[in-house]
Image (cartoon, rainbow, N blue to C red; front, top):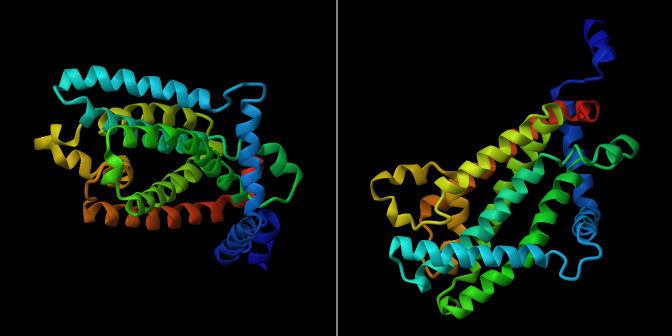
Length: 277
């Protein structure tokens, strides 16, 4: 009788039932993955409606930033431009993908409040929407990557399959962080400001604008930096370098633990997300 009264008051039927419903949400979203892609494509196209270059405006501004930082920092560090500019270009593009996926994750559920309250769409659909939107943006920015690799000859030694594996690890980890932050932001509206500050700090402690070998006596700083491993898994193969095995182990473990923990939290608060909004 006590258990029945608890179910009546809270609508909860136990942890196992909540996990089953969360899995159902995930399965349903995967069956309608095309909807998430369509929503992401609409987000990108509507943002630049009426513009001549569309999202390539961001690519153009990013290209100018790469040139500016590359030339200035190459002289400051005393490094040849052909060695430093590709490092910066790839760093900015792929760290931008990480940062964009995570920061936009703050609005994953908040911006979908209307649809969530009026439809029965699976909530994971909006997680995929955020990830796909940033994949589309990354696709535009790859113009910079390809141009730099061709111009400086790195295409001859680039390991595309290894870079693809690294990109998968990058998206897997940025994805669960994005979802976790989205869940937190639905409940606490201060989270976006905190995330923005953290990502602004992270870009300076991650070797985006500076070579890894400049941190000779403090390698442990990079070893515990997840953004370094996410970036290195993609950038190193494209520049003809090997990815350290511990980087793959770090990213695989991080993805497994991160998705498991995020899914557990989602299963626990899934019913309350709409009320938070």
